[in-house]
Amino acid sequence: MTINFYLDTTVNTQSSTRILFVYVRGIAKGKTLKIHSGERLEPKHWDSSKQQVRRSYPGSAEFNSFLAKKTADIQRTYRTLAVDQAGAPYDDIKTALIELFKPQVVETSANEFFAVYEQFIESKRLQYQLNSLNKHKTIIQHLRDYSVSRGLKLNLATINLSFYDDFSAFMLRDKQITNNTYGKYVTAFKTFMTWATERGYCQTTDYKKFRVPTEQVEIIYLTEAELMRLLNHDFSTQPTLERVRDVFCFQCFTGQRFSDARIFEHESAKGNTWQLRTTKTKDILNIPLSSHARTLMEKYKGVGRLPVISSQKTNQYLKEACLLAGIDDIVTIVRYRGTERIELKEPKYKFVSTHTARRTFVTLSLEKGMRPETVMKVTGHKDYKTFKRYIKLTDKVAEQEMRAVWG
Image (tube, rainbow, N blue to C red; front, side):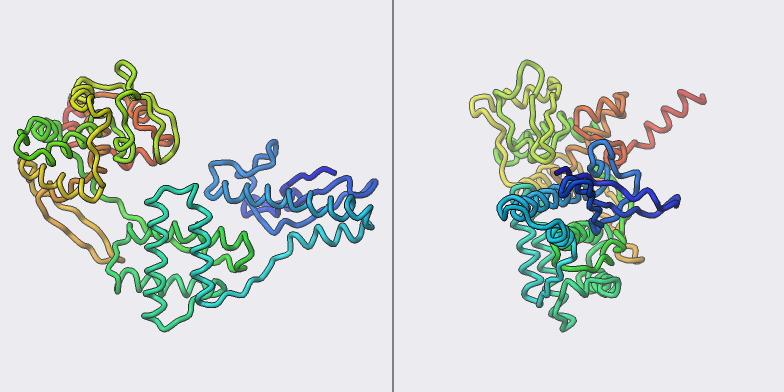
């Protein structure tokens, strides 16, 4: 018996999606069983040679996991009927295999809705970082608050566009959440809904139409003068601030995330290179260490690690350190809540966090003439679209380059 997946080629259309069919051969002599998988896909996302969804497609891992599970279900069902039961009739096998792809409607009460979401989180515990898991836990709490506020019992079958409109109003108006933060929640919630649909907990696909609001945001980074002022500030009487400053500056000179600075070990540095398997993406990076990075590393050689504390405490102390180092220029940050413009004017140190280090590395590296592809190799960015969010060229650099080209 062989199992293959093919997109429907009989539909002569330029757009839209095609039905994915399953072809099962070898059940009986001269017979091929063709089954509608219940899934549709645009041809550009399908790799016919591997019979899998391309990795560039959002949700490819879940989709391919679904195909692998259905393949195993077919093999198990065929083995049970045709082998263990000493050869069931073809029609019985055919019926059993088609049944595998029929939607399984699972009724869910309000409590079961949250139970299914908790089940999703548990299933992802070995795949997701703690921050991602906590994001889904936050969404659950918002959904509980929404349910109480509206006097509704949530059911997976009623997660439709009307729900999206009302929940959006609740999050933006009642919870006072900005567009970008809400957009992250919507993206995460759609991931859960895809998982629940593939496992038969609901049949609605309206969630695929949920719009993810995004707004371009200002990039906060330290100028070279600010970075060196922070690096050289005397914190000898405040050892906690000194250690927080050192970890942050090490990030600024290597372009790595706080989670990777946390796992740095002295023995992972070979010569002038830090060999790192990143915590978030599991990529292997070889990061050149500048003289400043090596100095900070050697400072804690006896300990073998950088003196990292929790991210919450780090962000708290980092703001204090930047204040003492005189990083206090007034900065304007604009956010949107729906169509409402929210403008914040605060001293720069109030906006500095562990994320600022990575942005500082990218921006200063580009300002100094490093090619974008070289910076991406160091930071581990795979596509320019994601990398571009970290770029913030100053007006001074733009003026210098314009003068160099145009005079």
